[in-house]
Length: 206
Image (spheres, helix red, strand yellow):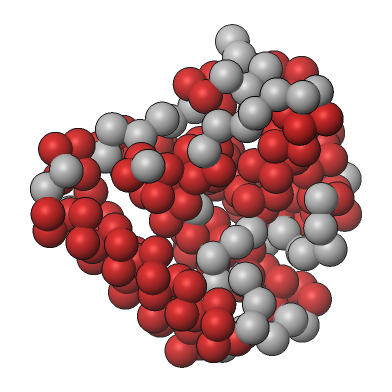
């Protein structure tokens, strides 16, 4: 559960970048106070992430505070934008597939965690077309993978049993899970979704 909670917190990295993209491309509303609340909580949690491996009290407290503050931010703005972006859409897509097949999904936060570097890779692949400043909000995929590993959390979709076919299909269709603008939909609009989905799938399942 600690790993799942941490994975969900890591997901806020790409959630905030997706929110910025939606503001700049679609004119969505953003509460800067909520962004600040979430970012401060993330910084504190990530600074103590290695301690989660040993259930260090300070690290665990920082994790709980990060989860709580993202919940507060969602309550303040009455939407889940401060905490949920394309990384959650991938997790939901996988979960719906599991349920349709009568299989119990694993912890949601573990899936969100491994989905986050994947969405970060989307931002990298779309860097030349992103609005000014958006790409800078999302660190490189490898940095997020290292952050997950530092806390002992799963890093790759393969680590949590996501099949290659399910993974590939989720990259193509994950943006349809809910009407929330994200970098996946942006890639679709720019004609790059298919190529990016294939490239990432080939890398992950090489």
